[in-house]
Length: 264
Ligand code: 5RP
Image (tube, rainbow, N blue to C red; front, side, top):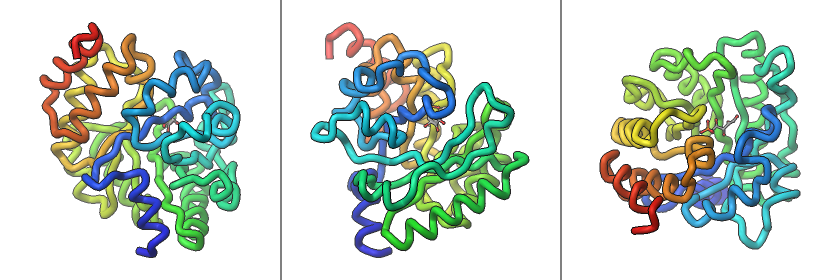
């Protein structure tokens, strides 16, 4: 790998090889998502515990204070919305030149595999990878399921991750699922877990993050289950403890509860 590419990857994946990305890109198709109405207010307290921020160019420029930022993974796909016909019909929204001007450490693009727009999505990923290779910018592929959350099983996600890696993604973001090791084992590049919509209890999040890490994920890109929680800082500290310190789900739960009440 060229020095620039390797250096940029090291900016977002620290030397222990594990990472916690903070995604605040949801507005690009959902509008002002709950608790993300003012992105900087949401993000600022979480920054000390985040290794990188996943964000669009618009929110980056308008809301993130440059001198206080963490490394940026720039979302460069979009063009659809929750109220439109088909979430999968995304294009590339931001050029590689602009990503470089914004000092992005990496770029991210969604691929909706199995959708009507599979071919366009995958060719967009390929073009982005080609541009990234030219300038030394790593590409993170996001295996998106849109509204079809039931698609989250090892067979489907394993297929998506492998295809994204074959097309040259340096990192793949997918959902946790049962038998997550099958997803990781079939993917030749590092796999990161998204969280999805907020679940009922914190413990469920700690359980799946821990299980995914044990089964080979290198980290998380987990948003709503952190910043929609009633105690976002306690939540991110507990998840960081699993990702970077190898903590168990039970230990993370204890840390969450004591951090929430201000004891730790
Ligand atoms: C939105 C995204 C998000 O970055 C990704 O889904 C992670 O966020 P969450 O944990 O809230 O699902 O790609 O399109």
